[in-house]
Image (cartoon, rainbow, N blue to C red; front, side):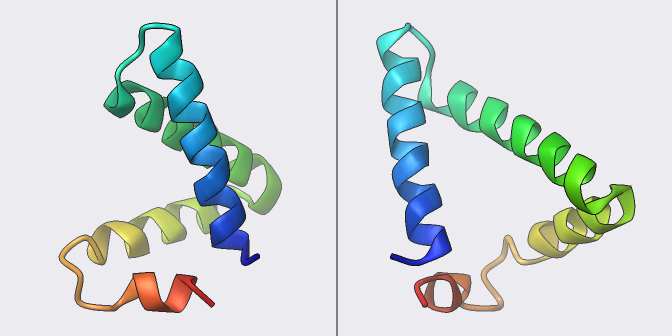
Length: 72
């Protein structure tokens, strides 16, 4: 299983657990983003976290097929 497959499975579990506790999917995903960004910042540094976020935000329009890239 790819690293993205592992994370997608974990996300599905997190969302299901949160919905069971009364939280909406979007609330659980936002909490996940915030927590993941903070963990990444602590691990890779503030600059790397900012660069990763800027890159990902720039790709929200789908210019690069990240689904294909991340399925590998």
